[in-house]
Image (cartoon, rainbow, N blue to C red):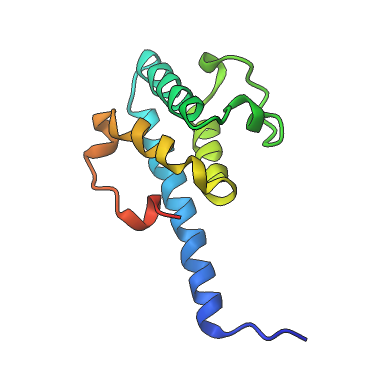
Length: 118
């Protein structure tokens, strides 16, 4: 039987909080944008992901997101996608960081490095 140490549980809880904080930050930031700005953010995210040889569309169906076009994605769906990528595809985080950095709504409140770091 494997024993889990108390500090491992605490670290795991902190990671979960970080994932949720990032998801909430993306959702809230997108809700503060106009529909056109939301689409521009998603386009930026898609472009940055492609630069790293990732496709946003590849993750939508497994997440249960039915959108087929950028303008069909809701702020909550984009936030879930970002959270999923942070947890499961940490190599995609530079793309997320660059996309977020290009929109002032995400810069208003300082992003702590541990939220974006793997």
